[in-house]
Length: 315
Image 1 (cartoon, one colour):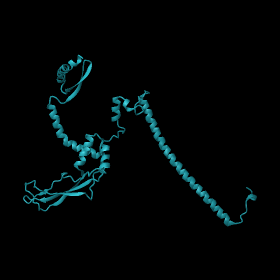
Image 2 (cartoon, rainbow, N blue to C red):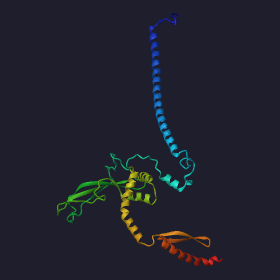
Image 3 (cartoon, one colour):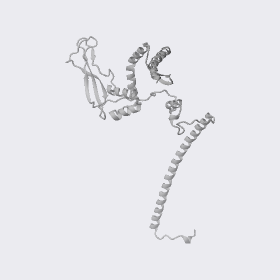
Image 4 (cartoon, rainbow, N blue to C red):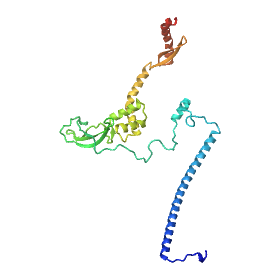
């Protein structure tokens, strides 16, 4: 550039103003470039992470291919359009029982250090019941009605109020007094024993057992139904499992008594068996017992059937 091309500066103020405007424009452009560089850096980091995952997946697939040894993979409902109903019974059973979770090496259940959760008590229960001490368990003396008693333990029980209604929370208070005869402490009896934890009432537990045992509904859907229909907000699959475990333990004595009764009987039930007579398949109900009993009953059933059907066979 020669000196002849330089425009002489006649107004210094206008020149400084134009210079400032140019500088401001350059600063804005620089800021935009820096933002774009930051965005590209973030995109680059994300792409690098995705690339690492893909490399790991490729290695896993290569190991799987090497394990298969180039063999042809049988098509099933998981890797093709073959419906599950067309698979073999063994394949269907394996598919139902196969877990998608990878083993972690830790024991099942709650881990060490895990903070447990339990039902919290409400400050505004629907109703309150007081359970007074009535009879001294030590000397058998009757506690007078006007005896002074104080509350020493409280617990709450949650019960369903109805379909699409708020649950009913009953607070149970255990009252304690001193026996006037033996001067020992006497406690009232709570429906939950000496437990201070909040629990669900018998109606809730009955519905859970019915839905699982009779209707065969899974844990997750039972918990969802109890939350949506009966308003039990904190009802979980773990709660369903605990309720079923407790009630299963209660029924164990009756279950074992039934098993003992069945074991003593010669015939434990009836079963259908098919027998071809005159090229026609006929069905009989036979006792389910030992093979010796079943074989002994077949000729007798055939004789009865032939006596009844022989006149009809002539026509």
